[in-house]
Image (tube, rainbow, N blue to C red; front, top):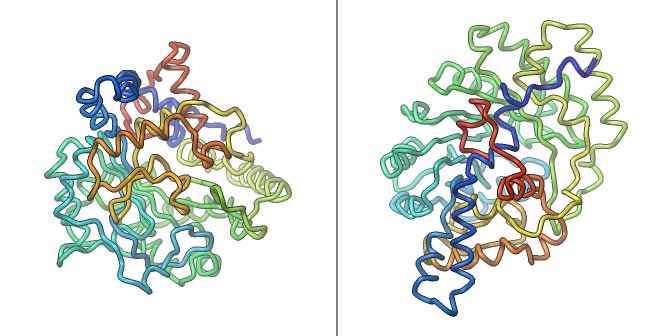
Length: 398
């Protein structure tokens, strides 16, 4: 039965998550190889290396955390959840958005170690931030990940290509247990408000662990029934993304968060039962969800790649301006490249050149992105080529 919902990688959610998207930036990565060569020869050609290092710091895709303030206290949150409320929250300065533009990204996903829609700066809110981003970088393709408990006022949705609400539960009781607050109904109400907005794709996220895995399949059914009951004309907009909760190095996964083989067997049985009982859901499950995600373990890549192409094309910018090459090592600060608000682009570029060699203990322990690094390497070697599927080829986010 499971074969009925195996996705086509060129369509729907599978296309948006297609790992070949990193090859859309193959010419960029080839240029980064040349820049890296010049940076490493800095002792021979210092002036040339300085300019190359500043260019080497740039990224094609940026993850931006404008706020570290959160109104939830999610189980497993490595950022501290609403514990940040105990101290003065940090917001990225609105008058420093020009610094973000120095990274010259083609696309940006706004998310956070806090809730991004709670952003405020000297009386300005999230809507002003979006308008500022678009004024400074009018070419930018934007996406937003939010907990959905607050919908900021303004016309900002017109600038957002897709949005994902992290709900992670199929019932109010499960939501309260996972999120720490009883805001399930508010999040679902926000979901329907966003369906009525200009945003092209409106998704719901289910970050699964041992705490909520029993509702894994029920979540898809709940979303399908809610949309078909209240806004069936918006069903083509709807997406569901399942992701496993991970605890990156140096943190071990607590036992209560572990998804077991028995859990996966239960997911398979429930999914097969749903397919039999409700065949009308098959197109939705296949094209608008990645429901098969939870059936397979996803350990850190065992085949390690020696070069981090991911770090050459991607950056994370935190609310305080700290810059990272990926999500790994943020909680410990192990892979911090510098600070966008206080360090030069040359400094960030030199730090990036160090990270791409993957000498850090974090990288040596294991990397979630070596699958993408492998695809990028194969592209550089001419073994892999970019997808020709329109949905994949046209998407700069990876």
